[in-house]
Image 1 (cartoon, rainbow, N blue to C red):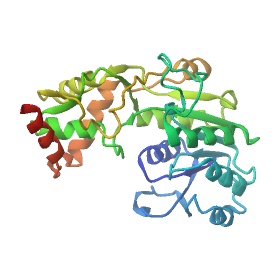
Image 2: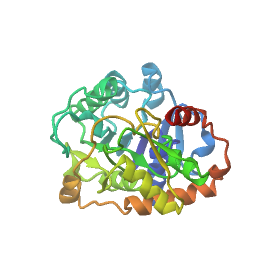
Image 3: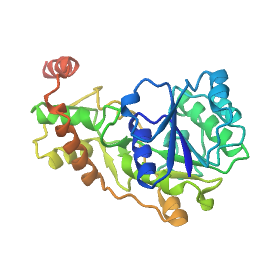
Amino acid sequence: MRVLVVGGTEFISLHLVRALLRDRHEVVVLNRGRHPGRVPAGVKTIVADRKDHAALGRVLAGERFDGLVDITYAPTTGDDVRALLAALGGRAGHAIFVSTGRVHDHALPIPYHEDTPRNLYWGEYAKNKIEGEDAYLGSGLPASVVRPTHVFGPLNTRNNETFFFDRLVRGRPVLVPGPGGWLRQFGHVEDLADAMAAMLGDRRAFGRAYNVSGEESITQVGFVELIAEVIERPASLVHVAKAPFGQNLVYDCHAVYTTTRIRAELGLRPRYTLTSGLAQTFEWYLREGLDRRDVDFSQDDALLAAART
């Protein structure tokens, strides 16, 4: 297949490009061209800002693809999605839109499944993703939606697992917001990439939305303690009313999702458990020398000093 990946040089999209190349697809990426050195050999780059709708029409004129995976978020509105689809003029084949579990109403009881009502619990981000889902599923193309949550792994652009690695390898305490009992669910980036690569062109996936995540849910406190166990460092937890906790793991609700649909309909399941994925990510962290980088802990120190008074 000739596959267009919108993105291609950051976290999820770069792992997807690698998975597609492994599976011997012809890969084209569309992005702003800011990181050409990250694009693997043999991959064509089409340079455009997806929010420049006129430019999309120019650079995609005459291009034809068997598959499309829309990943990048700029933030991307429904109008931006519709502009991309108009520029492709139906020449996209099977389209996969990367949405989020946050399209669902998180005031409802967990777990959330693909048919859990969508709403704007998560504000503008949810609004944009819902509009993107609707644009693809109503486009007339064979289209699928994937809804990951808290994707982790090497190259993560979210400072989540590395946030805790940074503190634990330096022997620092980890601040926990409140009791730390809200449930989180994580999915490894390679599992997400592999699922999308396998899904492309599969007629069973046309018109369907899928939660794509790991199978385990864990509390905020449990997540820190699991990381400490995996990397073999002691964990000292300090509970405060409000504290930094990763880049986006603080919010006051549970986030747990079923993954039965993708297993039952497509036979896809993750390779990584949360433990094995964290171990692999920590190996990458050490290999990249991130344990030796300078990290600003001033906010932590101020909160620790206030907690002791």
